[in-house]
Length: 172
Figure 1 (tube, helix red, strand yellow):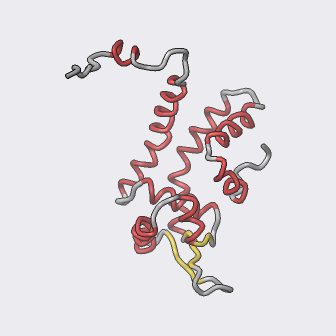
Figure 2 (figure 1 turned 135 degrees about the horizontal axis):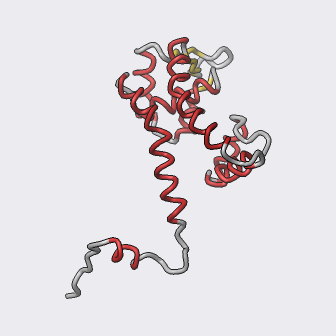
Figure 3 (figure 1 turned 180 degrees about the vertical axis):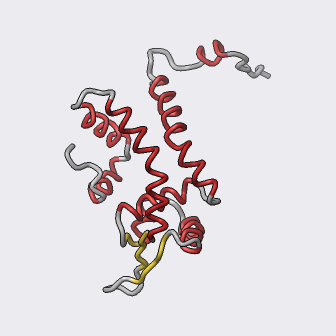
């Protein structure tokens, strides 16, 4: 029976990684820290309301596209109807989102942020926008397009049409 090797320190772990720099560990690490800090302030505000990141995602898209059908939100977030229903119920019950029936298709449920939902979204977004603006301000002017193209490149090709529909790729 072969003995199982245990990694006991950083040198052991690093020696197990593929040779030749095939893993962009520096970028992966930077993504970790950037995401941690990007979400940290918003997480604290959400927690005070008894909400989590799923609530933030829903508020983001409902504010971005007032009147968005629930079906579109499910497609964007790639979560189950049950998960979305729980989050939506909390946002609706607490007065952040309202749901209306579609004019042409009565089966359609359209989502709108209330004044309270728009204000909360604004508070959640303020620190994140500030962090992005500060990082972009430290770069040469043409860098915004490069950063945007890089982020679009990180999105699954099949989902890029959704970015276009949400007008997130304008000017690329």
